[in-house]
Amino acid sequence: MSIAFITGGTKGIGFATAEALASAGHTVIISGRDQAATDNAAVQICENTGNTVQAIALDVTNPLSVATAAQQIKETHGALDILVNNAGINIESPGGTPPFSSAEVFRTTFDTNVFGVLSVTEALLPLLYESDAGRIVNVSSTMGSLADQSTPDSPYATAHVPAYRASKAALNSITIGLSKQVESSPIVVTSVCPGFVQTDLTPINKEYAPLTPAQAAETIVAAALLPKGAPSGTFVDAAGVVPW
Image 1 (cartoon, rainbow, N blue to C red):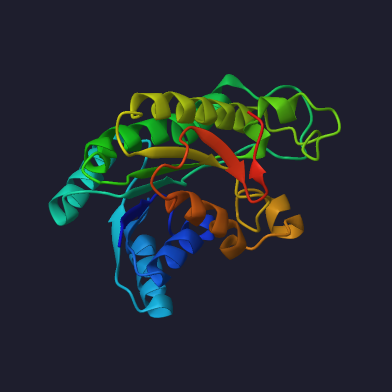
Image 2 (cartoon, rainbow, N blue to C red):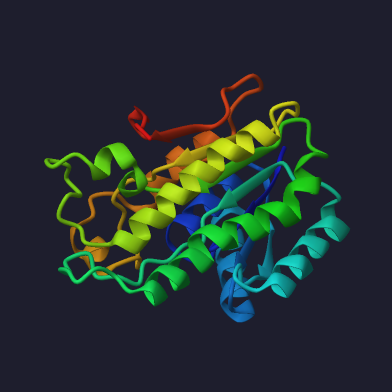
C-alpha cells in the first residue's frame, strides 16, 4: 500500500480524502496549521477507519514549517508515494462586485494556493522520486480554467473571485510544467477539480453546493491511485477532462 501526505487535512475535502485513503488501507499523513486540530482530525479518522493516521503541523506559507514537515516524513517513512496539495484559501466574496481585488488579496491568495504548493512539492519531491509510482495531485478548480473564464454562459461567470481564479490557473500551469520536469520518472502529476463542495471555502459553498466532501474526494483519490502508465499533466473532474 502507498504512503500518502495530504495538506489541509483537518476538515472538508482534505479530511475526506485522508479518510478514504485510510479506509483503503494506505498509510496516511495529514497536515494542518494547528497541531491540536490536526491531532484531533487524525484521531477521528483512526476511529472511523481503524487505521492510524499521522498528524503533522504545517503552514504551507512558512518555509521552516515546510522543511520541518518534510524532514519528519523522511525520518518516519523514507519515501512518499502520494502528495495531495489540498490546502487552499479563498478570501474573496463569490458574490462580490468590482472594483477588482487588490494586490494584497492576490498576494495573500497566491502565498497559499501557489507558492505554498510549490514549497511543499519542492520539499517532498526527493521522497516522491523514491517511489515506483509517485503521484502528485493538485487540488484545483474549474474556475481556474482559462477556457471557462472566457465562456460567458459558464455556471461560474458571475463569481467575482479574480485572485482565486488566477491562483488556480497558475496552479494548473504548474501541473503542466512539473509533469514535464518529472517525465523521465514514474511520477504522475494531475490537476483535479473536486467540484462545488459543501466546505468552509466560502459561505456560498455551505449553503448551495451539491457535493459532500466524501463525494468530492472520490475524484482526488482516483487521481492519487492512477495506474502505471497513466498520462501526466492532465486536468480532470468527475466527468473527465477539463479544458485548460
